[in-house]
Structures are given as C-alpha cells and as structure tokens.
Amino acid sequence: MTSSVRVAVAAVAGESLVALVVAVGVLAAGRPPVFITSPAASSTTTSIETGVFTTGDGSVSKKPDTAFLYAGVDSQQSTASGAQSDLAAKAAKLITRVKSLGVADKDLNTAGYSVGPVYTPNGQTVSAYRASEQLQITWHSVDTVGKALDGIVQEVGATNVGVNFGLADPKAAQAEARTLAIADARSRAQAMAAAAGVRLGAVIRVSDLTSSGYPSARFDVGAAAPSATQVPVGELNVSVSVEVDFAIA
Image (cartoon, rainbow, N blue to C red; front, side):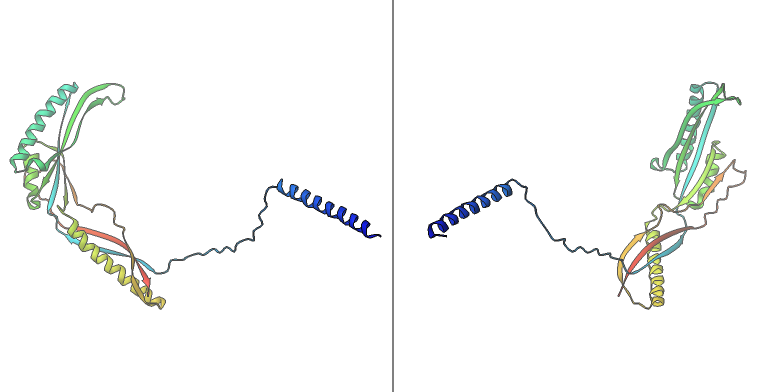
C-alpha cells in the first residue's frame, strides 16, 4: 500500500472512531443516571437494663383526728312539691341543730339531694313522690361523735346516718410509711444482691405504687338507742408501696 493510501485509510478510520464516540455520548446522555453503591454494614444492638429491681411496703397506725358524719332526712307526699316543701322544713331543722353543736359553715356540706316518683309494685303507676337530702358534717372531736349522733338522730329525727373516720392531714403519716417502704425495698434488694453474688449500687429509680386515699373505718347508725351512743374510734392503717430500682456496683 502506498503512503497516500495509508493516510487516506487512517483518515477514514479516525473519522469513524470520532463518529462512534459521538454516538456513544448521545446514547449515554439519554439514559437516567445509575448509582451503584455497596451495602453499608448494619448492626442491631439490644440493650438489656441491668440492676436489682424490688418493691417495698410500709405501714403506720394512727388514731383518727377527724370524723365525717352523714345524716339525711326525707319526706314522702302525694305531690312532688309537697314532698319538697316538707323536706325543706325537716332539713332546716336538722341544719339548725347541727350548727348548734358548734359545726362551722365550712364543715357542713350537702352530700346528696333528690326528688323523684315512687311507683306501685307493678311499676306502672306513680303512687307518691319522695324527696331526700343528705348532709356531710366534718366533726373535729372524734371522742364526742356519739354525742353528736344523739343530737341529730334523737332530737331531729335524722335518718340514713353513718360515720367515717380519717385524718385531717394524712401527708405526714404517708411520708412516714413511705420511708419505711423504701427501707423495706432496700433490705430486700440487699438480700437479692447477696444471693446473686453482686454488690448493690446507687438508686436508679423510685416509683410510688400506692393507690390514692387510705382506708377509713365506717359505722352505720340506725335509730339511736335511748342510752348514749358509743362509737369506738380505734386506729387507721396508712400504707405505702414503692418500687425501687438499684444499679449493680
């Protein structure tokens, strides 16, 4: 092949190569980009809380310092207005007697009031109307509860009478019981740690498991006897339950 021919062939080959590169560039420009990534190493860690978890109970006994008296009056008449009017007169007499015993206005509350029909046994006909009112009296001298009951039952004719005993401020007793409960929880935790061969660490969390309120003694009093009414006071148990979580040292 002559020199001129080789140059011509090279020129043609060069033009073909350029055309091929241009064509590949055009095709590549029309495609969406493709990203190839290597999967990242993933690790799942599960944390298990370690420690000594226990509960404790504490209880203290206290003499009640407050009595809550419940006394009601009612009336049954042929009409609702008649029952309500008669009830108003009876309630006024009861309230006057309660106040004469030294009960302040703030210690006298209405616990319930109702006016409604009374039906015949078949439940189809209204035979009368009944009105009732219930009072709650806060009595601060627990040792004279019987005298108060005699005053409102024998002298006024109150019915549906009952008594609850409680503490005017239970927080101090609850705090005392809570201290005992936490000490009980620590004692249990120390025994558990010793049995497991570990040392007890710092407190992680403390939770109060106590339900609201505290038990109170209740007495239902019917018609008072001619002799003075005796209402033993006794003591209340104030209990607290806690959960205490300790770290392992």
